[in-house]
Amino acid sequence: MTLEGKVALVTGAGQGIGKATALLLAEAGADVAVADINGEAVESTQAEITESGRRSLAIQADIGELADIERVVADTARDLGGMDILVNNAAITWHRQFMDITEEDWDRIHRVNAKGSFFCMQRAARQMIEQGRGGRIINLASVAGQGWPGTSNGAYAASKGAIIAMTRIGAHNLGGHDINVNAICPGVTSTPLVDNMIARRSDDLGVPEDELRRGITESIPIGRFSEAEDIAAMAVFLAGPGGRNIAGQCLNVDGGLIMH
Image 1: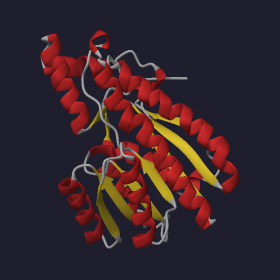
Image 2 (image 1 turned 45 degrees about the vertical axis):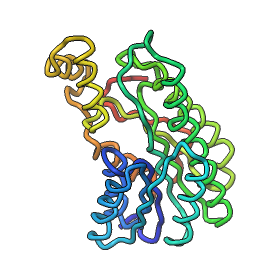
Image 3 (image 1 turned 180 degrees about the horizontal axis):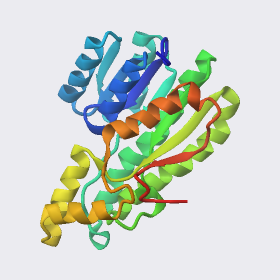
């Protein structure tokens, strides 16, 4: 078990990528605190982790609230013995055409995705620095933050672009404390969030959902959507020995959708 003795915190762990990552971290040997705005969902994730034999803590929290972020970090450190890994995954979005985005849309999305991600990273880093044993911070960005044209919600894309920027700045500022900061940029991934967005886009455009899915799939060189477990595998790699000398990178897990 490559993460034996490590403590991880995963936000947005009630479903999708966050849940898959929490379970895979536990499988790799970590004790895992899981946070989500949906208390029932995150308790379900916790139950699966404890059934696997690892310690876990479920925390209902709104990552858009700084007080909740501070509580999540403090509870994790107190109950599980510190924090070595942060997977900064909590995010919100919905289908919205570029010209229809409102100020309320912008503020709601950035409150969680940009503000929440930044202060989770900052507060987790403070805990790691105080411990003096280094750490890993893994932010969940998106190919949308790199300008993927399949994204119509510009507020969401901008929030994920902000995560890419804060990842690089964070890596510069925290590397001296042996804290590696990286981001993962998922492409189109089979999660409840993406399923809901495709359904809403289908209704908005009057295009059958299966036709939309087929068109998206054809745009991906590998020819398939990612699964949440594909993203989780990258997060666990970055958290483990293989990620020891990787910092300030934004790694695409997208089937070739965006190429550099």
